[in-house]
Image 1 (cartoon, rainbow over the protein chains, first blue to last red):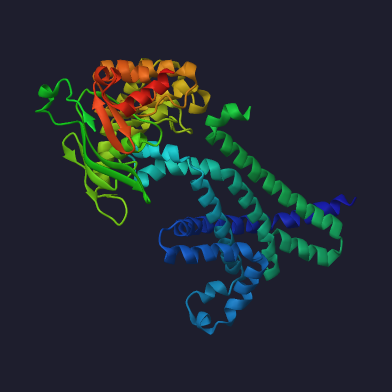
Image 2 (image 1 turned 90 degrees about the vertical axis):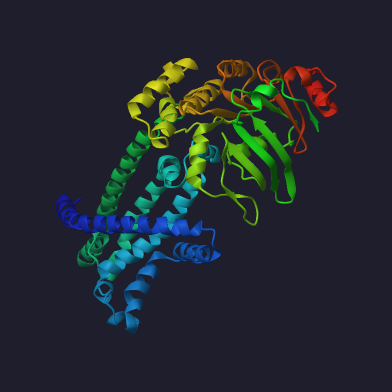
Length: 230
Length: 268
């Protein structure tokens, strides 16, 4: 085992972590905001709102993320009107294309997670809140959302982990996050086993931290299930 | 319909009913559950609402705080008419704030307790007084603790609902309703989801409340409670009030055949 080499590539790959985390964090944040809107639209009473929102969810869940990245990075540039517009300086950058694709993609999944979590709130507890004079935002803020968060959190932790791994696709459009650096190292040295193993270990470590963080959060929120867990 | 005059009719004539409905109708699709109900409950009355399953008694009770929207009819709470507007289907709430305010005055206890699982018992009690009625937290906490003391759950204040027995949960739910200082309390089959040996502790709390003069409307299958505790029986049959009167009058028999049949099933 060439520990010196491993140490060297490890240090180089660590430089990709900030970009990986940045892509993940921005996309998750934007995706979550978007997901809330999409979820509200999906559960809307008006068919004209519900239809497009449902189509949006199906479209982004039903097509590969890699294709979405390609379409946004290579495809949008071919639309002349877009090239003249004020957003072109952003869409020209692979960074923002990756953020856009990742955000849209995670928003579709997250919208479904939110929908499931809200639907799983026991109707009886909502009725009890109504019968105590709660309605509108107060009812959501005090009862529905706190319960839904507890239902949705375990599923959402998987989505976060998926997203950390999904940022590796951004390497295809020239971004030097962990996988981008890894790929460059591999094509420079051809020592693929060491290189891809170390990269895998870095992703594993990152996701382990995420898992732990969610586990702690869940434990904190789910005091009411303490007995059932035992 | 068999109507007997309430025993204290003369003293009630001048008073405004606590809860009053006129011509209450409710249908689910083509199925008509309530077919025109006129009903008044007066301050301090304990009314037991009886009827076989499907008679509409739970639906009737739920219409009184608009958890179920009536299809037609007029609803007054302590003389205040609840604003309802016509839509293509059921009536709709005209002013949500009025309904929210009235719901704290006419609190409800559910068959399945419906405590908020993610809050402790004490938090359950404090939720509505603090966040709906906007009363001072410290004062509410004292009152909530006193209420838990009263229903015998003070040592369970920091437990979560899932850690309590059914009977304890229902007593906590009753306490949650009481901390809002309601003027009337609706009970929707409060003992039906309980193991037989736990029914007694809940009924004991309800008897105490009745003795204190709280206005209570109780949908129940507990004939003992209906006979011994309530001032008045309302017997629903196929969406109508088939008979109403004092427990002595109705349980004496011979007033209404359907009621006698209904009661005989409990005695066998």
